[in-house]
Length: 426
Image 1 (tube, rainbow, N blue to C red):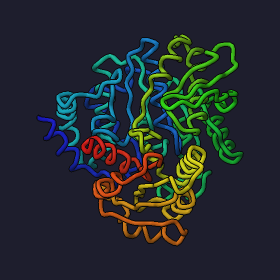
Image 2 (image 1 turned 180 degrees about the vertical axis):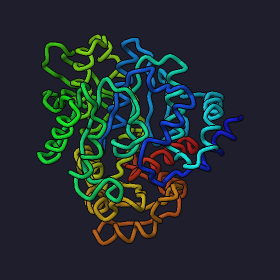
Image 3 (image 1 turned 45 degrees about the horizontal axis):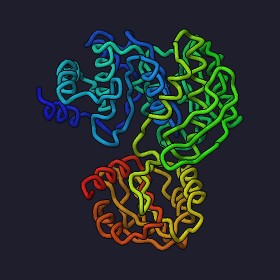
Image 4 (image 1 turned 135 degrees about the vertical axis):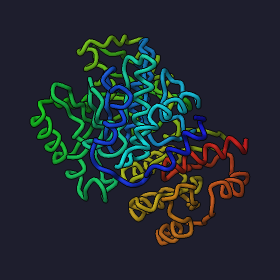
């Protein structure tokens, strides 16, 4: 089987259909020897910040000398970037070999596995076969019945809870929280970021039910000392952590994420995982996470951010207003998926930018740019639209002023597609 044939097999599987239950992924994993039982995992759920938290844990653990597997979704740079081992994507040959091993179980099933379930099984099989010592795994959707919930966690993490995927997870934060805290396991600490009182009660109830301890990860006092172009400098006064460290991930919202990771490191140390302070400093200084307030150009400054829900839009809008006080210098290239809170995101973004340029990404769920522009325009912000991200960037970016700030986002698919286009344009 070639990589192209493997991708063709995966593409025949349901990609956007939600199939509750773990039976299908368990059957796939059984067919390849239950690889998920051969390594401990850090399992990360939440509405926003999951990917950044996963990336930070991955970088710090690798700096500490561990062989680390990382599993995230969706892809941003390339389809293969979902699965890494020690920072390296699986090769096309490894993808093909993994799907070949799973193919009999995929094709013979009466209840066909979902696209995400097959890739999850591939990831865990690859981790086991290559001797991964610890995996950092991002939940795909929800938590309780997500395919990743078959892992053997040494730590579970809930970054936060906000309204997103309401048609699937529930219409209130409390309903959504019940699904996300379903990753809690007996005897395994559940580390939580900032939660509302009602969501915290849901988390506490689930922890009592399964026999897990909830640990708050929002109590560290992190102070921002310096906001540099490439890294930010933080200080924390806790005896068992480095007093100062630089973080390569920009954006004010990363303060909550890195505080969560630092508290998680303290828990991992208590559970016998050796992580020296030097590894924390090195890992956080080197961590990369494409598409999350990623500065890809200067003069003008171009930032990619996959803010894809209302909470993410608020955080991004606040950040750009702080960075560039002059609204007329701020431009937004915006694409949103049609099943998101488009009205809410538009209401949040429009006042923060001097112009909004609506685009349509290649994602089949993308809202057409003309329809998006019609939603944004009543908020009073000058708005135009293009049928594609490439057309917008080719037409508008060459005329941008050197002192302008351009943000491209609204979904991870927009950020990923724009990243590839900008590399092509040079």
